[in-house]
Image (cartoon, rainbow, N blue to C red; front, side, top):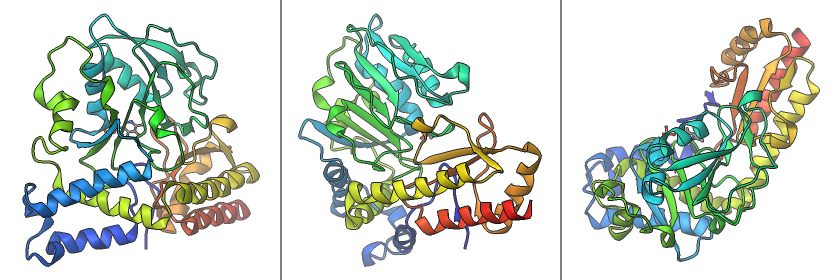
Length: 354
Ligand SMILES: *Cc1c(COP(=O)(O)O)cnc(C)c1O
């Protein structure tokens, strides 16, 4: 047994791995692998429909919000969002709260005028700036709800009269939010929803079609909506895996139920970081992420030994991102509380022995 704390691609529910594995060999007793299954078959159209419907249901989305499963990762959304929503002279507000946010800003410059309304870069992205103003004439405000690398998370989503757009790659469906308050949400699936290769986009269709630019067919959200997210061959296996995870989440009791567990996991690990004399959390307490917990050792020289100790006990993926250092334990939806307990026990044991 290996305990996978990787930031992404990451752990998924065991039953999802098992069902997906069966489907690779023989999907639904069809004699065909899901990998060779036609995307225009009624069976796959059913999978796509169910996956989209489950997102709608789990997020309590209204009828203005459409759900798409697209290619290209969250990174493609960095450009697809401004391409669809900004004319060259349009201003959009961006929050510079981490490496991913900065990448979104860079791409927006290709299509409009992103204005950085706040930044925590000077302090190594270890907090979230709260008192910033968004100019009224901005087309939208873009936030990264959870900053995967540094381990910060907006515990209160900024209130704005502007259109709100969010990169939710690393905390989508992990906590209850008013998802209808967002005009566009995007998330690479490989952190909290499924296999790499597909991106979830939730978009309020009323914000589309308001600009003059000609948009390439594959980049225009409206074409994907019109075709039920089947404009071209979707990543069949990745969508199937998402559907299985979404079914699992629904069965568990939905977002409300998983949020309770996620809170418990994060509280347990942060309590140990704060109690244990060897470790210190990296970010401001009020901005701590419940998905990616980042911490360092007070004595840097012990970090390699702790990492080795964790690895020897089958805990993998806790080395921090190279730009943040230290450690990062990712506690996505599929991570059981028992695995977090194991990590905490190891931290205690390491303290006793050092
Ligand atoms: C992982 C991640 C991305 C990049 O996702 P890709 O699907 O690899 O493009 C973007 N934003 C955030 C917040 C992430 O965690």
